[in-house]
Length: 237
Image (cartoon, rainbow, N blue to C red; front, side, top):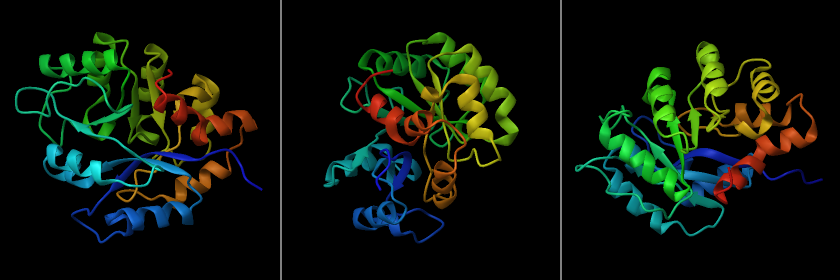
């Protein structure tokens, strides 16, 4: 019996520095998705995360399977990836890895470009901090931001951010504690919680198992599994 579509919002394609992973190529990644019954994935290229974003973003153009949705990594400023005029519904920001300020003038200009193009930003709390997220969301309230890399120790800050900024969403890869996803969905609405794994950097089987065991109404679980991701991919907040 088939269930609602499952979309992994946060996946890496390509080799990673510290491990030999099946998702080092497209065929390997597709096999991993099939093994875990994940229907589609939004993918950044590892070269864009760990190397030059321009190189990694270019490699996204070689993806052949439509189940893999390319997500470019963007860097603001004159030494960055250039002005953003659209072309992808999701983009990833890695300020700490690529050494730029998420609340500097170049970053705010990029955030305004993303908002104007209807592009949602993926931003990890391990790449910034709650105060910077607060200032960024406050400066460009039209920008949709999906926070990744959250977890037990950041739940209080996360709840405060979600309370204050309706354009913020959260992804589930590190929300592995008992009842965390349910608590966020009940407090802030299931429309603001999206399934993701962060794989292969973080585990994919755990979040996938948790998705199937959510103690939520079926309609809410379906939104988290893939409905919300499909909505953002269509440019709908």
